[in-house]
Image (cartoon, rainbow, N blue to C red; front, side):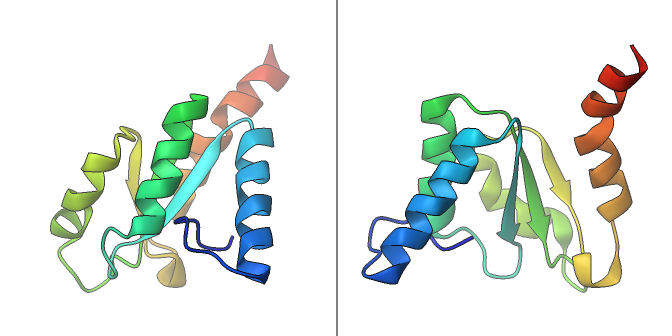
Length: 112
């Protein structure tokens, strides 16, 4: 999705609107952030929107390969999303566990 931090112009405005609409329509949000880049204004804006609409979210910190993952994740705790996962998508690290957790409520519904 496009960045959302309130400074969008032109086509970025439409991208931000579409991102927020997708969040509003979702049952659960996988909120993907860049562990190497650290906390950004866009991350803070999205987290504020999630809190405002009380949408269930899983915070996914990507690009943790080759760095101290816990240190990279430390700043993201202030976003207030308690369900945090560390992944290195390019290497597949942590992705299976994330998908199993994200999809488990839907599989539980199918089995009952």
